[in-house]
Picture 1 (spheres, rainbow, N blue to C red):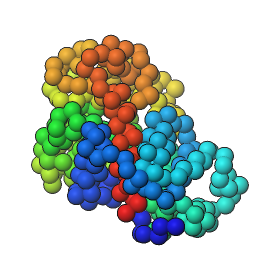
Picture 2 (spheres, rainbow, N blue to C red):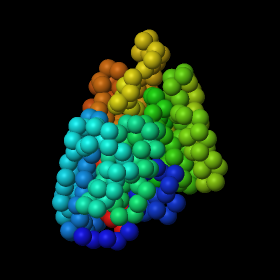
Picture 3 (cartoon, one colour):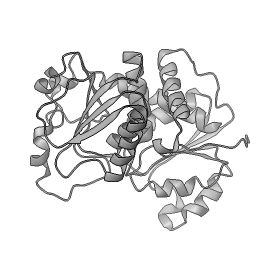
Picture 4 (tube, rainbow, N blue to C red):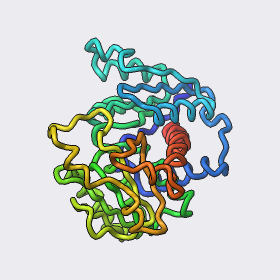
Length: 308
């Protein structure tokens, strides 16, 4: 068994600037065919553990690992003895003796994944926690790189809940030079204050900006309009009237018209008629399904990097 020290990808904030740029560029290189799968993970075993539903991320990591030559073990929500009371620490001691890479979607606090990462024999990748979805951000910025040839200097309008996708996007985009991220979130559903502050702090260092507002007036002209589904995976909203609060934050033709050159992105799954109209999602300016394809390339980059 290959026992090189492994790295972990739990949060964008854990990456230094060079590693973040490398992961985005490597994802884009896989997407463009400049780097081809060639047994980069030959002889390694990748375990994929998903407690929550997933189409794109689970398939991306499974397919990506297999294409890179890794063997694959897949766990569903009821497969590990965590369900019967075994501790994360004991589970980690066992898995890290048999598995090289561990990809987990929990939709629970990232602290649990940090407990899995208290060792360097098994690389741990956050495939979505309650606070952040870091590999989604890698896919997003890889998609932007392929479309625009760069991330630096891009202007992005994000519309919807300040969820884990928004957090990862803000934390990643703010680390590039002279970017602008405009978050338009419903009142009471903004980005977590600590994560917003972290993104704004990074933006000040890079000459970028992250701004949040809770209305859909005076929209800026941008390069990318980004929407996410209103009902975040694995969560429920305490307000029974939340749809009324979200209704003004639909991305329709008028929103897209405010940025005549912009492309449309969406982390999917999408609910046409809620956060986005069918005309926008299925229209000629939408790159949402190409963005979904980039999840496999970002998964490959993350797996390769964590394998060391």
